[in-house]
Every structure is written in C-alpha cells, then in structure tokens.
Image (cartoon, rainbow, N blue to C red; front, side):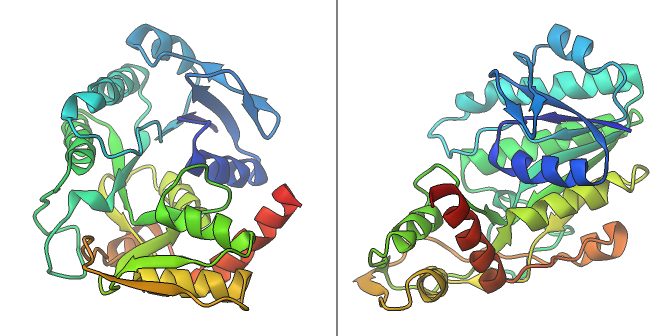
Length: 290
C-alpha cells in the first residue's frame, strides 16, 4: 500500500508518518518546500492539477493534511486550499483512489448543545471553520461520484515542539524554562484537547476502513478549561510554581464533542488523557532541547 500525504512538513504529519513507517506502509510525502522526514524526501509540489496528477500515480490512499491552521480575517486566504482539495478529488476519481482522509475541525460547530455530534447542524463562527466545512462539502459531492472521503473533525490538537504562539505551546515553553504560567481571564469554558498522537491513530484507523465515507468526530474525552491546562502543565513541568490567574472576562467559548461514531465505525479509541500526554511531551522537549 502507498499512502500520499499532503502537507507532509506539517505538525500532525510528523506524528502520522512515524506510525505509518512503524507499520511498514510506504508513503509519498507532498510539500511545497524541499526537505525530508524520517529519512524520506518530500516531493515538492505547488498542488496544481498538473503537479498532483504526476505525483499521485501508483497511490492507494490519500491523507489530505495540507491546510492553513491560522484563523484569517478574510475568506480569500483559503481560496488556494479549496482549489487544492478539489484538484486532489478530481485526480482521485480519475485514478480510482477512493480511500481518502480529510483533516477537518471542531470549528465547523458552534453553540451550547454539548457534546457536539455528527447529526447536528454545522454553524462555523469564523472563516477557518467555514473553509473546513466547504472542503467537507466538496468531499461529499465527490463521494457521490465514487470516492470514500472520510472527513475527520478533530478536536483542539496539541503536541510537542510546535512552533507557534498558541496558548498551550506558550505554556509548554514557559513551563520548560520554569517561568510562571499566567491565565489572564476567568476560566470557565471547556474545550476538548486532542493529543496529536491520538489524532494520527485516528487517521490510521480510518485508512483501515476504505469502504466508509462521511463525517467522524475525533476527540479525546478531555474537556478542559485554560486553567486546567495551565495547572496540569505546571504540575508536570515546574511543580514549584503556581499558576497566576487574572480577572478579565473570558472571550472563548466551550467546544467539545462525542466521538461515539468514530469508536463504533472506525474502532478509534484515544489512548491519552491530558496528563499522560503532557508527561510524554515533556520527555520529547527534553530530548530536543537538552
């Protein structure tokens, strides 16, 4: 079996590639940039139709991870990624590559009816969620043409050594350096946090069900406030410090899901609670940073 992975230089791809290699599955790693992972060179592509048509020959399944992670202020920033998604699906139809995994997001949901489930109406509240939902809809159209696109709606993904300034990654870096963690607002909203290793395992489970299609929530069952997150990281990285809490009003809202459908249909079961994942992340940071 040969698996093509778009966005192979991305954060989640790193976890997935290791699991695929451990199962002796051959991979084609697609990226806009030169480089390699686990000793495998990226195939450089602009994700145009012509480029993808050449690369995807001999492929048995596609994992579509290439995507902006940033929430932009206008939808036009996502146009190229929407076109890329349709290019992939057009070529998949031509080459009869039916088994496709698309990395969607909990951001397609909103509201206060928890936990979110796949039967609920979607109502994204930002352009990122709208973009993810549009790509899901494109996949559904191509499912009617013969593909088996599995849209995996991931909860809030985190992991080791991610290079951005999302709150959780700032917490990891500061805690590693024994700096006090600060939560600037009252902490009420609960969000579902998903360790990237569990997200990669969900993709592996989905790949093993080539006949399935549709939407699947992929969560962890860990519903945490920002204060919960900070206190757990502090306890494991720097227990001598206490978390400083502010009194501002919180601006985020709760977001968590039911993953029952993924558990029953894909046999996906998360293996990590938040504390276990944070302990592993600390070990990985120690190996990288010394």
